[in-house]
Length: 376
Image (cartoon, rainbow, N blue to C red):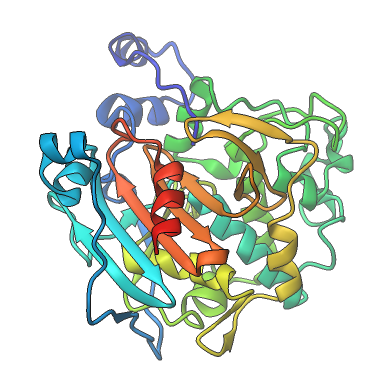
């Protein structure tokens, strides 16, 4: 999530004057301001039950020790204290499928449901892979209007494919870095809001990060599920077979609308979030259970030539075709959410890092993950 959060004193006045559209979203923005780790409490939600046959991650008999440099050690004393000082609230390291390090800080514990924010888009892309396998979707190269006919009357909408939505090359005029991102995040009626934007650019030629792309995929799934919910399909297709230990949830836009926030609303414990990294590390099979086709995993990690190389808080990285980032050297990949939520995978070291926090602190997290991986 790359939303630019606007000045809310002024917004509050506008809401009171009734001068803005979508007032309910703006009221939520005034109340909550920028999202925090408490985001799961902001919304109604749909529960995702734990696996019927959970597979708890084993803990190493001897925990890993991570050392600070001399200057940081002098200031903070320990790696744990340094993590906490840099706004970390959960930090889990899984090496060779075993938890070698696990820490929680503040009010967060091993059972806290933590919001993945834009890492939800990565989960959504996996779910599309499952839908393709199950025949709910014939091909990601199909126009979205094959599944959702309503926007077909808008210019160029019939040229937008599911693949372009996944890659955010749809040409839809939605810029996450404006206040539109915040309005969309807090919207109480995503069913209508997601169709409010026009296709400005020729589909397939222009990259623009925007949550609306992934949210449109919600409607594709919703219509193909014949009365079931996207959350229930996620539980059946992903959460149960990966052996999740704890219940999770998908935040909804509102109880009355009932739309899962596929672009930014998945919540789970830190340990269970690690399973997504393990699933990719093991090419779609986790602890002997085939969950996602290997071909989809491989396609997911291909660098996207249209998105190209981008500069982020993590330095210069590449975006992939299915909502991951690749480190520039190509050794590792990661999913990332607002305020520094990470699932980082270093395949050559067989390690997954999970970090949740209420800010980045002063740390280049992906460089840290890489350095720690090299030390194992």
